[in-house]
Length: 171
Image 1: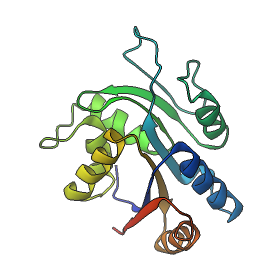
Image 2 (image 1 turned 135 degrees about the vertical axis):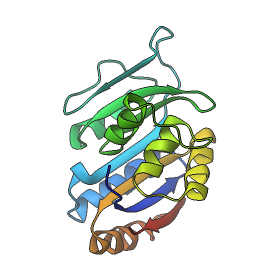
Image 3 (image 1 turned 180 degrees about the vertical axis):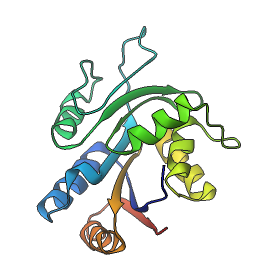
């Protein structure tokens, strides 16, 4: 996948992630250019992974209302069990990067499938490791994909919100 300009917000809770998405939506961002990543805690034990593009997932965890709301405005959804991280749910363009990494057997030195997907978007490896650690710590990532101007607007929209750490990656 081509390197992209990205703004990544690490959110302390699902409530904060939801607030970030709502603020970006109010600011006029194209919701098809947002990705969300977070853990899913109460998944079916027999599920190994599930993804779809442009449709809704059929099974949810205990945060079903949160994820269901996101899927109504984002493009693409996926459920993965990532060794070392556990079950995660992903929505938005990042799904294609992770799936591409899995389907192409992409192995990026010591990174999980999630990390390989982030790395393929142009996020430096040290930042990828920070984002994987955030997910392991039950935090959420909200990722804005777009132009440099979009990144400046996203940062200005997200900065006033509490409980977020923001980084911009321009490529």
